[in-house]
Length: 304
Image 1: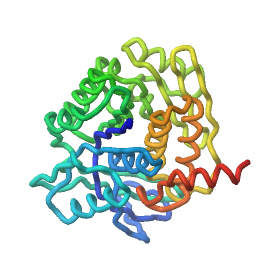
Image 2: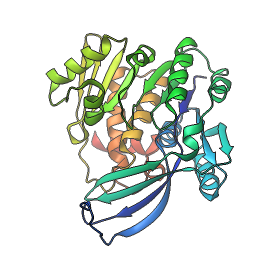
Image 3: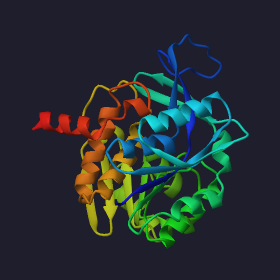
Image 4: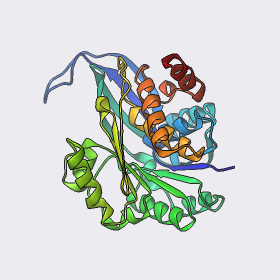
């Protein structure tokens, strides 16, 4: 059976709602504070697992109360944590402000910044050709680079979601099959803002020179675009009354990967990811907000 391996961050989210985003030096009264298991790696792993595919997470937590809660949440959603190590440091945290359905996030990586290459090698030693490897940029960069290199050497399909985005050495792209970015990440990586299809194509052509196979740009309420060689797909967004967008991007990545693993055609996998991402916005939180395969199916049946 094919599997998904996610190398990524595991954070405890500290979430509070506000009437609007505070200005510099401003103090606001918030409400609805809660703790929420998150982290891009953990969220993407949960999104995969909730679509009924075998999912392994590679990462670290601290030996603290947050670490125990984070591990319990992953087990709740059937994510295999064999390759999650518990270290003598603090777990990663994310401070999240929610206002008018949008959010702002500040990270402290903690244990996420100490992923060991031997840890990745151990996990991928069990992988088979055409399994899927997903990673982001919330772990130490050397681990991400080596993880992508090793995954490609072993014949895995690689998905790279470079958030939080930063300038990267171009050699990384030759080990990436699917690069998934939002508009701001695309601009940071290429210097090109994908305001329309022509600009998005220019961004793809720029990255393709360095070996990138496919580029997927998520555009929020405007859907998404995908470039793969000469193929182009424009996927419409599903309109919902957004309550919380915190895990929407991570859900897109995980849901997309789950469909690729199941052998679904690229355009249909993108459409499924778009629906699943939109449904995530209907609930507060991260992992608990991500819909299951059954819930997505029920929604799609109602749309017929």
